[in-house]
Structure formats: C-alpha cells, structure tokens
Image (tube, rainbow, N blue to C red; front, side, top):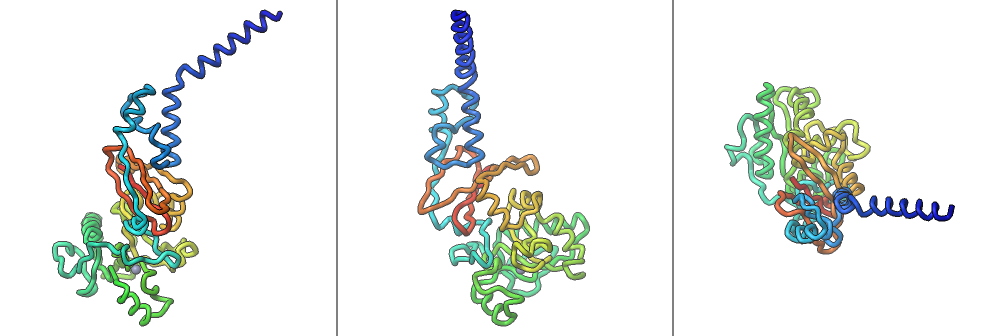
Length: 310
Ligand SMILES: [Zn+2]
C-alpha cells in the first residue's frame, strides 16, 4: 500500500514537472509579451522580454534579440505639452510651447484653399492640418457635398483675449483656454445653411474621423466637455485616434482618461494595425520601443505622453 502511494506520487511529480518544464519557455515568453502589451511597460522592465517578433523563442536568443530589436527613446518633460493629442479645456490651458510650429495664413496659401471658402483674409491654421482638411473636402466632393467654408482657425492669445472681451464668457473662452490657440482646431461652416442642419455638417459628423478630425463638442457630451453643442467646431487628432474615438463614442476628455487608466490599446484601421500606449512622465523618462516600427509621440497636456506605433 505504501509503495503504491509512493509510486503514484512519483508519477504525479513527473507529470507536474513535465507540464512545467515542457512547453513553458515559449508560452512564458508569449505571456510576458502579452503582459507587456497590456501594461505598456517602460524601459527598465521590458528589456528581458521584448524582441518576440523575430520568431526566435529560445531563452538565449531572446535576450540577445531584445538588445538588438528595441530602441530606447528619451522623453523630456516638455513633450507632455506638444503634439496632436493635447487635451485643452478649462482645466488644462494651452502653453506657449504647445502652439503648432507650422501656422500659416490660409489666404496666402492658394494651393491649400481649393473647393472651399474662407470667411475672411486673416484665417490661420497649422499647414499640415490644412493639407489634411483639403483632402477631406475633396472626399466630400465625391459625395456631392461641396459648400464648405472655414470661419475660424488658429487664434493667438491676443486675438482670443479680444474675442473674450468682446463676446463675453458665454460665447468665447479666455486666452489660453481655447483649442483654437493650438492651431489644431477650426470652425467649419456651410454657405447653404446652419451647420446643425446643413448637409456639410451632417457629412462631417459621419466622415470627419476618416481624416483624423473629431467633432469636439457633441450634443450628448456637454456634461463632459463643459461646452455647448458646436456642430461647426472640429479638432485634428490624427489616425488612429479619431477612428477609436468615433467607434467608442469618446470625447477627447474620455479618450485621454481611458488611455491613462488602461495604458495600452491595440486597434486596426483600414487594414493597418496600431498600438497606442500611455506613459506617465515625471522629469525625464526613457521608453523602450520595438526597433524598426514607425511611431509618433504626443503629450496629453496633463502628465504624460501617448505613443502611437504602426
Ligand atoms: Zn471653434
């Protein structure tokens, strides 16, 4: 009886041992990498378990590969306040260094203003945003929607202050608290009707996300944005963020919060895969990324950066 028990124990131990040592290294690697994706770890912890994309799964190779297949990038604190995903509202104002560097006067850029009008000759905007806007207008024309105009774009702090003094707090925001001060936002009108009813407004509501723009102050989110419904105000955030926000019904406030809570997000847009990760930044931070992948960095204007990898 005793001998039997001993024999069974040996078999059990062997079984457990086999299960543990057998397929482990591969699975463990996979697991670690999944965890890394989910938590979006930074430099210090990720070194031992990156480099999985090479298809080499033995322990000894993984470390070697990880050294060769990651790049360490230094994030400085000022990057928290630069980029296309900055959240600007009553809580988080625009800093001088957050203003887009490529602001142009659209009236002087005839090649950028085609198929739509400008309300006046002083309208300015980030040049790259204007280029994307032009593509969007061409897309709309394909759907026979073609009576767009830009009624407002970039405003410097002085202009914003003038508007605030003139129109009051019901209509305008104080200098530094408007997205227009970034160069990433614009008010779009229709020459036919009010934007709430115009086909231009309806088309943008459905399609702007395909070009990286979001309707910034939707009708059903006034409690979150703190701003009344503005069917004319669009903000550039870029891909894949506009697609994610459209799909999940997020305002920029909600999206930035979501990323801070979840650290990481994988998504597919038009057959392209993106990984979006949030990294808190205190002082200067080093972040380890897989080598050879295209990435973009934007601050959130609060406490960290969002990295978008293709
Ligand atoms: Zn606006």
